[in-house]
Image 1 (cartoon, rainbow, N blue to C red):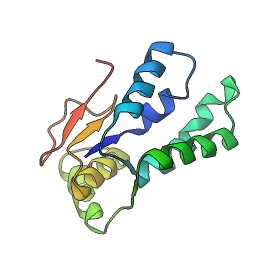
Image 2 (image 1 turned 120 degrees about the vertical axis):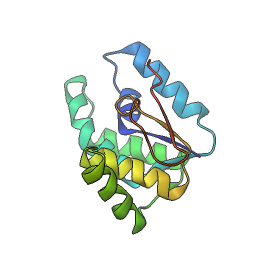
Image 3 (image 1 turned 180 degrees about the horizontal axis):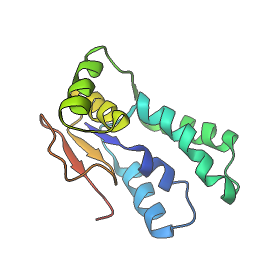
Amino acid sequence: MVALDTNLLIYACDKANPHRQATAIELIKTATNGVLLWQVACEFVAASRKLSSQGFTSADAWERLADYLALFPLVLPAAGVFERARLLHTRDGWSFWDAMIVAACLECGVTRLYSEDLPGRPVPGPLEIINPFA
């Protein structure tokens, strides 16, 4: 399974960098066997406020979230996510939200996470983190 981090969903809406926007849109279109993590869905709506200077409104964010939900099944966090996230956060030094996203991927069987922010860190389990802009 494949998951996309919040930054890719935001870039798909961000007109400030056409190259990043095109890359993000292409990944969204071609993500086979993709899922939308609950944490990413929540963070997308909250982070979309950064696009307000481009005229992107809260209503736009909710509409785009509906589009993403039509493409990808929503994965809700299971109780095991908290224990995995706790270890990543306290033992391995991940930020809380990064630990939650990676733990959710590991818990639900995601094998590839596209993210601009997370590559380069050792990840337990069969999860590959790829920066599509590198």
